[in-house]
Image 1: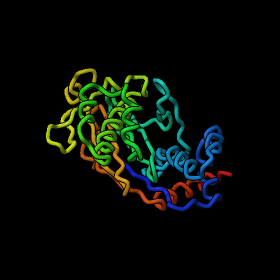
Image 2: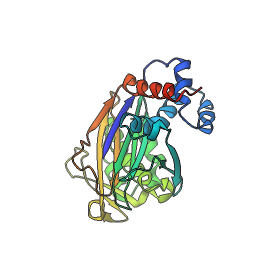
Image 3: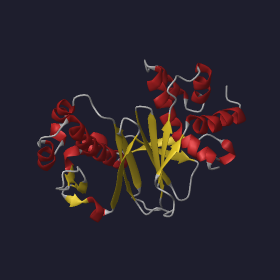
Image 4: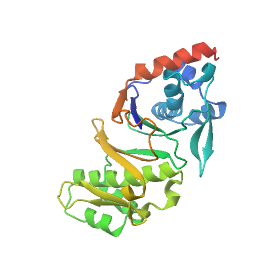
Length: 262
């Protein structure tokens, strides 16, 4: 399993650079990006769409430098159609604040999948808690009914929500899966540490799932990843690899020039 964090610049990138990078995605995608009102939202969306192209290119996995093509499975989860890789590659991404997180897994397992989600602290965690109460189990609600300050409540909410959301992204079902079917149980030590996660009442570790959770950025965003399937490259470092903007932008602009895209 590989994990990358791409940090977008604090200042808007030149429009010429944005337009050049956008040439690497399909015309329909370019039209959708134009609908964003805020430049930072458009950039986050563009970068998220380019993560796979970037990874394939820097690892010499593009055949004749032809751009990758994508399809969908289940209820719309993106999949890589070309190039055909062996072992197959599963991927997912998420974005929040100035970060786009991107994870991938190569596995021969027919059940292999991966999903990731990130969340930043909210201004009113109690209001957020009330808004997602139907997606919380009784035990999760009890964990949040303690005398918590906003920082503690935020942390628990981010841990719960990202673990629930990233699981549904891994299986390609989205929130229609029923987030209350995923139960996050905390240890009884007042440190908000997670003891286990259950899926439909079963310990996730006992039914072939693995998960990872950590913080990122000065805002202390929390991200969670789920994956299933034996990793074809088990010795790969699955810790977060930080990618600065130049490391992301430069090879993609090079690819645009190689393909003579206009």
